[in-house]
Length: 132
Image (cartoon, rainbow, N blue to C red; front, side, top):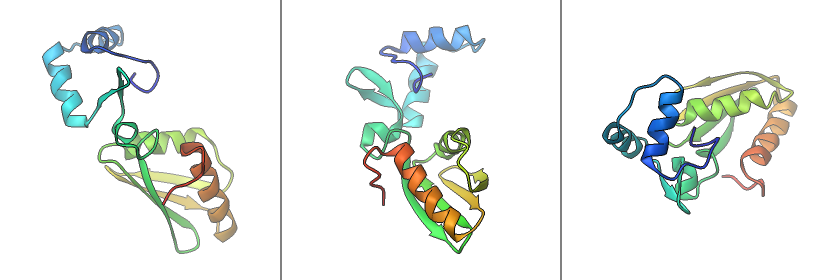
């Protein structure tokens, strides 16, 4: 919800969760926000990566590994969401992704695909393409 809508109060979060059939109280939402590292940025709740300036969705670092693998490092607890974003992009050359808590393995078809996928992921998550 936080990535899809601008939410500025915990009450809005409670109402949004209720509309999805999830019962929550303001105090439980408050604890969950703290645990997830979600804070307000310019008056609206934001995922940890945006709040800390690491990128819009928590991606920290991409590293090629061998000829057919990319390892992505993410903010803790965000790897699954980042993996979904990568999967949704349906990038040519990606065979599949596996996400843990803060790491994603991205299997690619080979060295040429690896370079192309690295560049495309950078362009999706960072408008300047700059990522360590």
